[in-house]
Image 1 (cartoon, rainbow, N blue to C red):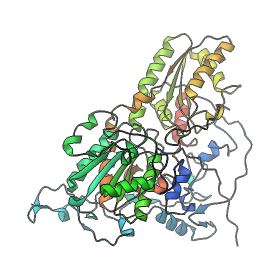
Image 2: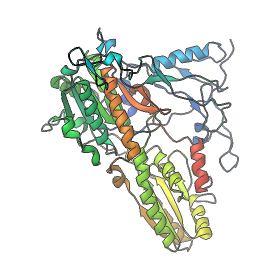
Image 3: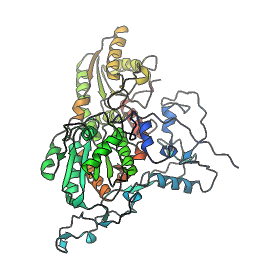
Image 4: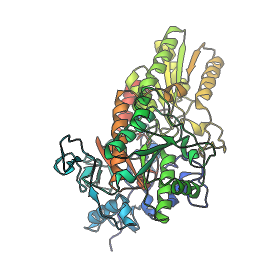
Length: 554
């Protein structure tokens, strides 16, 4: 038998924990994403997202060169590619078919007919104004529905080689493989009687621009279907079990103008409960649809709730809406709140630029959000055009030495008299003392790299006898609390609508997102396997480096 051709075997980055501390099983506590994944019915092997990317060559030093061309010792790459339960043998002519079968299985959407023998009915959702048969909506003649077999293509670039910038390859030859996912939107047939439905909405984790826009659109769309009983669960998952936190009745009249302000109309919280307690509450409240608006951890919690409902054979659709300023949810082009965060970050960067330029040897330093992913720092640096150094978690660097950040800052002061530095909050953690402390969500509490950088710059220039005036800005809470901009408001509108369409279509354990510019439904189990991170070998990161002009800090 021909041996399996070598493929890159790379460590998956450990994902950050979620926004609830105890949502795995009926009698288990949730302290991280690794545990949360056990709530899935899929095998642990099938949870692996193993599309291999040259991003890891750069990120983990697997290539022979770095951006400045200096040679580094190549590493031997191991030989394993796993899809589902079986290893793929790329010498097998049918490996593509096997891979495709595994992909289709992994990305199939859980449905309430998996546990219930139900017949669908004609939908009540229609934007057509003319009515027939005593006033019922003429849904059968409206062409605004998505066929259940519609699919969207997740990847559209055919890479010629694994060495192409940003290449994501399945096999060593970068063969073209189609990755199809379910198209989102209203279906012609639904699996719930709208008049009998009780729907609940909960916002989890931290604040994010656009939360109120999503709540508003979910309520609007539910009412178009004919749902009258809509409630909000206050202060995240805590609202399911905390005494004194009552359901908040929602209607178009109640939520009409909540999008005009930031924050969450329902309130948010971190921290946990047991899945069994939450599902007990869902049963007691007779909730049929639960819409969870949150990030990676909240998605893990939603999936655990979905699994427990299936275990109890409850006819409950649990649908998530991806919310994270960090833009770190897998497969999504972007998540709501991200565009607003980048736009608001411009104010901080511009202020730092003005302060630095106006001072003698001024150094502006801005810390932006991004625990494990540096998308905000990268995009804000690109859009502002005022950043000289951008530091993100995905790209390692050194502060001292001939090729360190401090030496480059010296050069910038000599050359132009001032400079501006942008850092993501999760950058440089390997340079700081690690803490085992966690917050209420189970997230490891990061050391404050922004403050560390501020102190490091001051002490370095003091030691070399060069005056430096450091202006440090941290706009984190200002960015989180603001109202969504136009781009995010549109995204929130569509995501909220599609979440309702997915629930009425009978899906559960899914999330609604924008993938390759198309709106799609994805199984939660796949999007929580690991966080999306900046690819250091991508064209976008290279564009950022071109804009800042920074060297490789090694």
